[in-house]
Image (cartoon, rainbow, N blue to C red; front, side, top):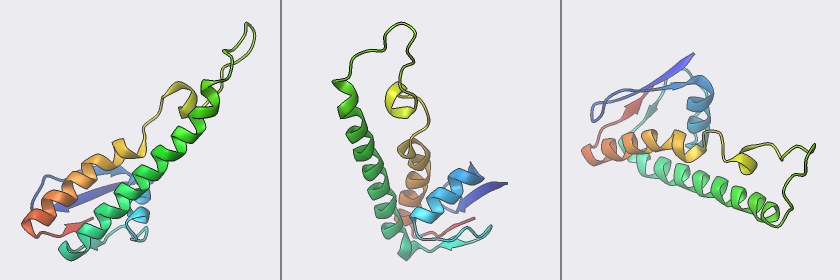
Length: 115
């Protein structure tokens, strides 16, 4: 399933279900297949998304600090897995950026965001 976010202030934004559901959960909306963020709710939604992004970045920094002093993997040993080790993977700030932009532009024009 896909989430298709719409606003009269921007182009449509399409996300895969897990990503869309995660963002909706952060802004305090359920996992319903259809819903609305009215213009008055947009500033709180943006603030919630920015707080979640900041929390994820802080947690990632905390994970990387112990790894910086760790010795490199020896021959035959595997390097630590995960985003903190290799810097791979899509971060929340990357997934949330287009949605935050849509919310900001919609708020500027006083338009609702629906899905």
